[in-house]
Length: 275
Image 1 (spheres, rainbow, N blue to C red):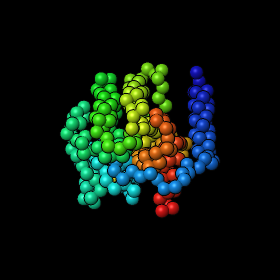
Image 2: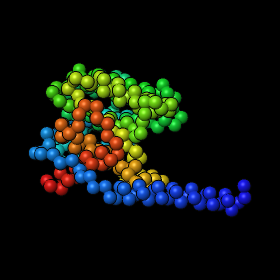
Image 3: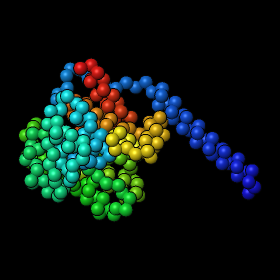
Image 4: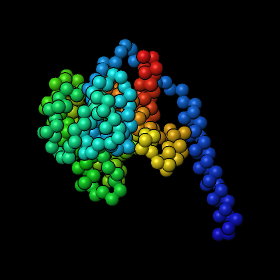
């Protein structure tokens, strides 16, 4: 094949990609859907717990919780501290509990008996991780916690918020997709008909907090956000807070894509502006 023809094919492909991207930008920019509106004050979520607060998503969730005046106490269960966790402890809003065995919660579960919502961001990349280990972290760890929490919770209605992943299909041959689906089904099954409402978050690219982001992540977020396939970690936290405060905003087993997460984040922002 001659070089001019190869060049033409290449230019057509590039042009198609640019057109596809610009179409996505236009659709996001002209989206007129508004954030959900709720009647009356929120039900309250004064006491919450965060698992995985040192990770990309967890740091953003903690950032949002620290900024929410309706949250009085944040239990952070973690292997190690972080600057944001330590700042929250110093401010008197965070209770940090260092914990290593995420299949045994017997030493920490009683202090979480009065927690109204649990935000689960504990996880790992699938790169270089075998299926057994990945499943243990993403399925067994949260499932075991849910079992323990059901035994001690003192509240008639609580919520469990799990970060899953976007575009996952039960028919996928990809290991991490299968395990994320298994995690959702396991948690939903364990909590069906109980005091716990389980909500699953399926974000696309997660943009780290300003404190955690490096240049490459900032560039990726800048590319993905205009077409609606990226969301800030802080916004995920805001959506979790809004949903946990509005107990009837979602039903048990709800799966939220990036667009819905952003809507609930916007609702949190709107409520803050009105206070």
